[in-house]
Each structure stands twice: as structure tokens, then as C-alpha cells.
Image (cartoon, rainbow, N blue to C red):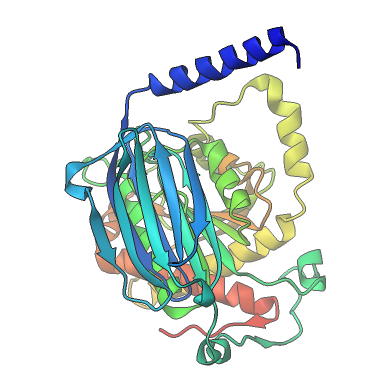
Length: 396
């Protein structure tokens, strides 16, 4: 390398270093964790996007994550979180250097099968998932019984069924959020983004408590997430099912009931109206229409998405009808929903009830009604998985 190139490289590195260091320090303001039945998730909340690095150290065993150009909230300085399981001992966090906050997970590598470290946006946060090795009694409990898959309700065996594929990871997508409130009731007391987040959290809690499924929410708080990013999250997580949860609205206040959609074209005026409302925040332009249409046509999961939609719809109606009278079954149908385009797995959108209808509105206020919707969704998911020939038990 000649002298001029060395000088140029030195200048570039200096520029990058000082450019990065001129960024204001973002605050690391929260650390939280949750022990799931078969893994532990640690989340570190940071007020703005920052680079981060991580590594593995031995004697003692530990994983560290360094957050660049950050400062630690004073309430967290040298904080230690003791963890009640046998493969993670504790979480420690401190201001490691003036511009670097370091989080450390003290572990026992002999009891750990794998770990994943990744980030999520809006708000920016770092997620650390730790997967332990299975003990003998857990292996026995996790045994899944098998049987030949049944054909779908249309009498077909999709490629998914022919290959004997199952379900391990479910991504739940609470619709709207942040600056996008979704539908709002006439009296403004009920907001779609709040209702659907509550239902999604209930579904997640039920599935994690009663099954071995890994359940991920696209948003866990009142944050805005573009429509186009929601299926991307499911793809990144290599999800097996994607379920977007919404509350409905109509210009006709007499319309009530529950309906479920899968990705397809439609000439149904009501489905077109619902799709138009749910797609309102899309940032795509007319010039991209041909590419969008090709994506819908080439979606090989339509048959299984339809099967999932029919099964979940049936389960929700059955669950609600066990307690409430006159639950309208509006069926499962196709529709061109942006949130479903691009999903690499069976994907559906559930319109749980109408905020624009006084009877549905009153029921959605009830925690019992939302709990029954969540239970119906869960039972539909289990019925669908069992139809694939992978029998999993669901303890209520």
C-alpha cells in the first residue's frame, strides 16, 4: 500500500470515528426479562438507534452486549437482576466506559443449547433469547404424537401437508398502533389499537402457558409499525403462522359479527371496504401495482391460509356463542390486505367485532368477551396444527 492510500485510509477511519462520537449519547432506560416455558427473553430498551456489539466469555461463563454512544439511566447503574432458573444466573448492567453501556448475562454454557441476539425498531430495543438444553423429563413432555394429515376443507393436500410440516413459531400482529389508532367507537371510548393489543397479549399468554409454541408479537406497546414491515418481522423470525388481529368498522352501524380474511383477490363489496380501510396507511404507489399483483398471484400459501382462516373463524364463533347470543358469523373470505402480502407462511387477518355496531361495541368493552375471542383464536390455531398431523395437547 503506497503512502497516499495509507493517508487516505487514516483520514477515512478518523472521520468515521469522530463522526460517530459526535452523536449524542442515547439513554439505556430499561431492562426487562420474561421466563418462558422453554426459553428466557431479555430486552434492553434504548431511546434511539445505536450500534451494538456482543461476545462470549468463559470462566465464568457469560455473554456481554456493548451499546455504543449510550448512557445508562442512573436508576440502572450497576443494577443486578437475579434470575430464577438453572441456566441463567443473573443479568448485570453498568456504564462500562463513558460512551458505552454494557449488559452481561451470567450463564452456564453447559446447560444452554443456543442463544440469539437481535434488535427491533420503534421503539429501538435489543432482544436476547436464551434457549436451554432440554432435560429428560421435558423431552418426554414435549413429545408430539403424529398421525397422517387430513386434507383441507376443500379436499386438497397442499405441499405443506404432503411434506409433513408442522408449526413451532406463531407471530401475532396487533393491528395499528402509535399514530395510527385504527377504528374508533362513536363515543370515542374504544380504540382499535388498544383492544387488539389486549386480545393479542391474551392469545400469547394462553399459548405460552398451555403449549410449547413460541409466540412473538410484532408490537408489545402502543407503537406505530408500517403495514409492510409486519410480515417482514414474521419472515425474519421464520414464523410458521402469521395472525393479524383487528377490530372492524362499517359505515352501516347495523352490521355486526366476526370475520376472518386470507390473502386473495375479491369482488365482495364488503371485503373491498374492509381491505381499503385496513390498507389506508400503506406507503406504496400506483406504479408498483404490477409487482404487488404478482406477489399475490405467486403466493403459494393461499390454500393453507384459507384453511387456517376457516378453522380460526369457526373456533371464535363457537367460543363466543357458548356465552353470548346472536353472534353473527360473517365467514372466512379472501381479500387484498397489505399486511398479508409477502408473508412466507400461512397468514390471516381476523376482524374480531365491529366498533361501529352498538352491540359489538358494548361487548368489546368486556374483558370476558375479549378473553373468549382470545381462547377461540388459540383453539383454532391448535385445531389447524392438529390437521397437519402434528398433534399437540392444549391444556385449558
